[in-house]
Length: 480
Image 1: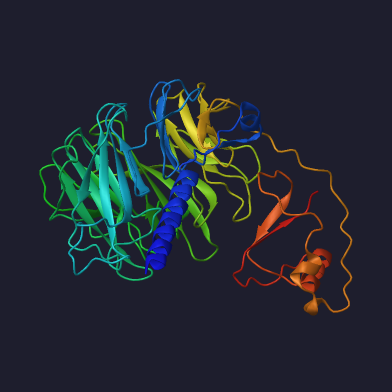
Image 2: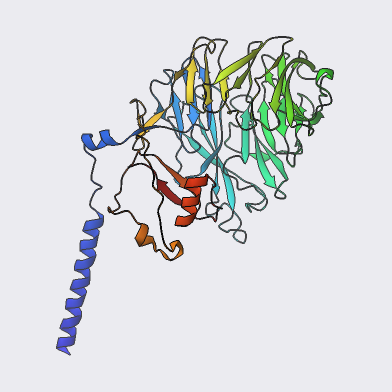
């Protein structure tokens, strides 16, 4: 009995020693990189999902999960992201001025945000983070919805909510509800205390889309689903939304199928609206710029840009009275098409899919930002010259160092692999002779979602015909 007790005591001491050793191992700090090791890590430009120039040299940029601010035209960037322990996605960002802004966060519902009987992994919830000091501090509130079920609230992380503010107190929030794979509708929420509390509005445009509020009390909405696109407005002093329909000008008939964007207003009376008209006959589309001088109650066509393809992404903007439309063939230097009052122009001939999407944000006729395939850049001369202002990071830390250039290796000849019976060859037989190493590699390669056999790879190399996709991912390197 004593021996058994002694054995139990020794076993307990052994277990305590093991746990203590593991705790010591787990408590070891992550080794810090030396300056030499850090210098070898490449500097990358952060992907920009949304951005806005707020004042001369001052603006924000969002990666979709990080919010950055610059006050010196992109020479330095500061991380002003709101606290986000659950790694929720940025559904939308809106800044009224350089100090006052809001971020709409979407992600899985947290404990206590849904009824107990509704709580599941598919529940979706929204939060609004707000700042009044340029992102130095943030406060957050949960937007209470009738249901958290993602079957009714669209779980798409890229675009399932939009918010807008007319001033520091009064704002509106549009959330998307999915009623099917191709149809959705929106719920409109309202705040009158700067976003601290939200309640669902009785007035609704009847569709989900983008919204924009103006100090005069007007709220504009554009969007829709299932191939339809609508424009609606709620004017000051009126309840509810009214739909607007702008017929195509005679010179581009028989174009139809209009697609509306949000209007841009210089003041309470003078504004512009861009409409895309397409036809199913040849898949072409024209952009028409409408002008209003009575706050959007009546519109007249003013300028036309032709020879676009239906579905091409064109993020135009109005700077003063100049209509700026970005145009760039993929892989080429982006450019702009400028149209003035009464202009009728056509973009150069191109193939569908060759047109790169660009976005612009101008402060005045001289100073502006743009984001194209070549990254975020700025101009101080109205677009004649552009300078890169892309926020950059090394090992996840913001830096002012230039982006690390990748030097392509010299082309190498690839000799086809001759195998007697390719289907019976194991993975070990075609594995590289050297052992696998971890780290960052900057050689040429491609990432494919297939796992072709050696014979398929040989056929691909000789004919250029890509094997069918079976859903599995592999990475192949073609350089040393």
